[in-house]
Length: 34
Image 1 (cartoon, rainbow, N blue to C red):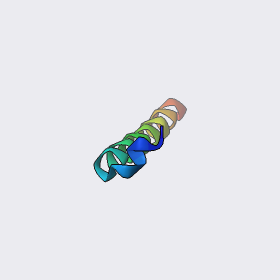
Image 2: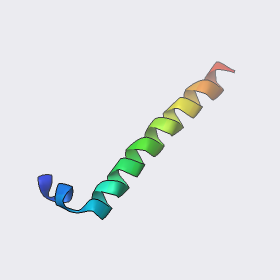
Image 3: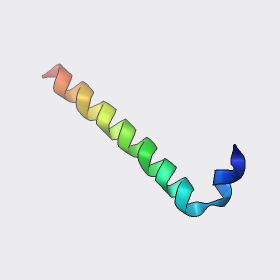
Image 4: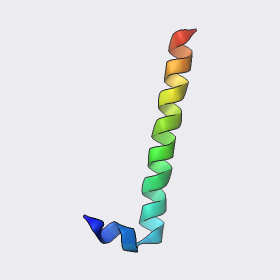
């Protein structure tokens, strides 16, 4: 499970996916409040 920590490229992709998920959740919640 920790093998991806040794791969900066894959780790960066995972980080970007997490950030994108958080941003998408925030946008959905904001749109839902309107």
